[in-house]
Length: 326
Image 1: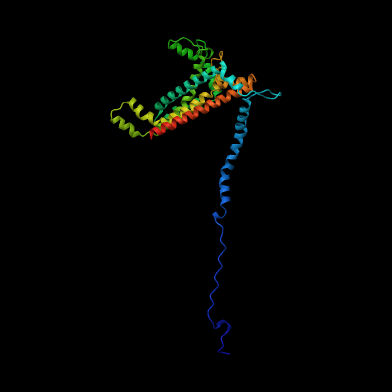
Image 2: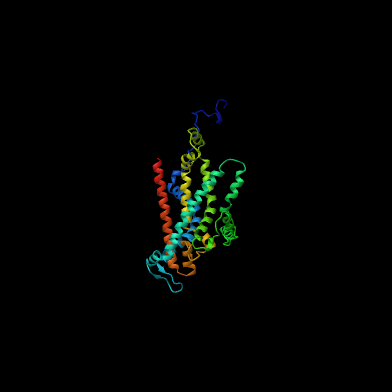
């Protein structure tokens, strides 16, 4: 029929389209916090694992073995025998060990003071922004990066004890007599100390140069306006600004001085007559030449303890000084 509506024009209330179903909630980062904490905690250790493995294999395990050996009489192929603190008692009462300890302290103090003083003087002389200063700084810094074996051989030639030796010739120009240097009991330790100062001062110079670069130049100008002389400006402006550099260098130099070995071994090997024997060379001879591994391990533990005490004392002094400045 003409009046009947077709299927496309059905009469009735309009139907609203069905609403789209909401998607299920996606669990956010807080859904599994334990996994996030686990992943975040393991990531740093995964990066550190190779280094920790190498340290454990070549440092921590040998250190633990040395502690055990210091309490035993080490007898290869026969079995170690427990002796307790006898090795430490023998080390601390042995005249050779006490003499080596005194030489070590004297060498550490001399090299530390000499390298700091000479390094500061070099830094003050070579400070500046001139384009050509880098050539002189590089030349001065060469002893630090030169192999110790080469340095020792060069100084052995310079210290030739005859009157026509290089250093003795210079002393002759100054009116001083020839010296035996490394061959004399009274001059050998001082000769080795001079080599250590000559090699360590350029490193200290670079640290001082970095510290001088951070000094506020207006302080120098204000001090000059107030009529302060060069020495007073150095004392009241430069040295206080270099206090952090002094602390770092003193700590490193003191520890390096206690563990000195290479220059002694190459230049004198503890001679003549033990006048340059230090803890490291004595421990080396006890362990690898005399096969007294237990006593050598006890000596190395004593050296480790002295180094730790020195480091903690320096850190405590630095912290106390920092509190005083506040």
